[in-house]
Image (cartoon, rainbow, N blue to C red):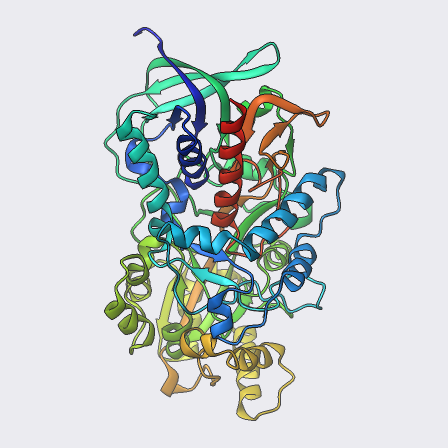
Length: 555
């Protein structure tokens, strides 16, 4: 075995996702020597954020105002706390982080990103619409701002800053360095040690070898853990799955690469950091199997508009307000009570053309590539966007037929389709269509989609004109089998408002900081039980900035 590789630095950053890049760039800008380690090959610089849609939560932004959206800090606070449902003693720091993040989203967040060259798509999306009372879950107004360039566009300025610091000699990037322990000296974290993994030429996101070829030790004045969550580790997801969401699914698709394994949460806990709210997690129920997978069990999330009919595995329509895009965890909890791991969308060609967007930078070449011509063609032109059409043609979960009887037969032919009651499916779809024929309705979903079209953004690109799904002029008919898709940890390392990791007694662990998903996006769970969307990459930006600045000031 080769001799142990040793390094010494002011600041060690473990994990090069968005939070790690922000923290490292802040520390380097403050004149500190920085080392970044990650277990993956350098092709993965930027982590999960690179794959993201780049959605950001702003409050009372110029984009909102241009569309006539009246937002305020008070309304956003009402939505955040109504959504989070903080109810534990452990929520003391998460609540403070939530208040601080709201101030950031209402204040300097947008200007700070604009100064770095980050732009935003002009149409604001309305995610997590809620559908309950004013104090319940959901966004009262559209707040989902898409980064122009999606995830790669958001990562780019921080990657550039890190690479500039690397070129100047102030920063060192060490790929294929897997941390297995934090170094403790008289109760303080003074660096980390671990395995050097064999060099790997795997492409971004592809699972890499875990062959160990050496060992390393890094001495550091301060250490920031920014290693992500647990979404790629189904064993941990099931281990920490909360009873309130029913039983964990036997089968799931995976919305993050395999390296999102939660290992640093356990390592941080062994060094004295307190892990809180591990049973709070954010998984989607609109997952589909990727016909062209990159990582194991690769799933893609549909970002649906509000028109598709949502049926459980037996064909029963989901209850109010569990419509597409309204309440992610409420829908997950309901579906876990059905005894099945899948559900269905039933829709028309007219709906899929207007309302289906797929999450992920690689599924949105127009926005990611900043291609205006392609954007107009794909979002406003005839036919489904190219990536959506590819799933219709090649995806294992899509059924496309000209009539309802054939559609149901196609649904029943898929794995798990034997649970479907054909008569119930027909009953639900035909009953829904009867409600479309006049301006009056008792169907809350139809009322909500009509209301959605009063917002210019939804009418322009996100909500199809109300129509009968079974109208041949709107066809063909489409059914999509939906899976639970793992994504985010909402709990993690408890931190104070300086990003310092806290021990069980509430005191800081000297020398240890945490940021991003590893810290529940701030405090050990800034979202509480539910997220308002656009708040994950935003939480990485905010917590990474705080931890980087605080750690730099401390060494």
